[in-house]
Length: 123
Image (cartoon, rainbow, N blue to C red; front, side, top):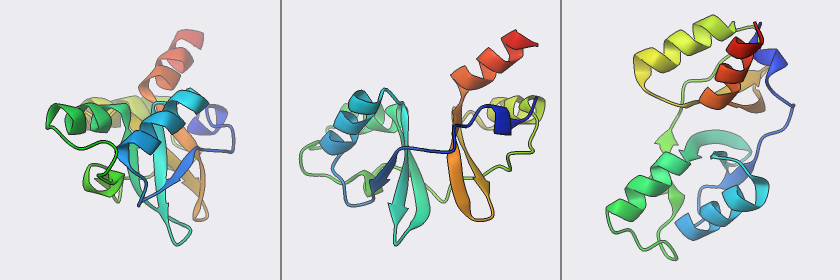
């Protein structure tokens, strides 16, 4: 199975100037645990529930601080042709839990560790 089977063609986006609180609200509203961070129509980062937890634990002012300070900048991206096995190996090697899937410069979606576990269970 390839990552293309796990992405919906849409991803939740948020601007880099958004506050931690705004990002948390968006994640809750959309039932996602990662947001693609955009600036000038380009993906510049990834903000996850883990990033939010680190920020809160470090005492960040969630109503004031932007996600730009806490996001993963310039995340590695993956082709929709990447196999689930390759994706799992990358996640295990890096310790990350989410991977943006892009084709021809366009974000197709974000695949998370739960998506990959589901895919492996289907095999």
